[in-house]
Image (cartoon, rainbow, N blue to C red; front, side):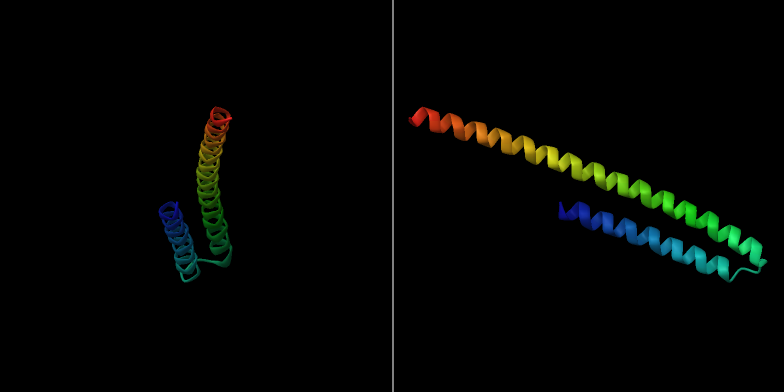
Length: 88
């Protein structure tokens, strides 16, 4: 699980870094204030959309892991009940 977390952290860092780089590039571009604000708004929306996608991926991974843990725990409880019943 830590490998997935590390990979996700890298992806989030890369996305944030790219966004910061894009904003800095836009701010130093020779455009009018109106054009610069439009470009920043567009890039901000793109970054927000990408972050939502990454969050949804992370949420799906967590839900899958929780279901696996629940399934394993249920099986272990059933096995323990069977073992206890056999001894009695």
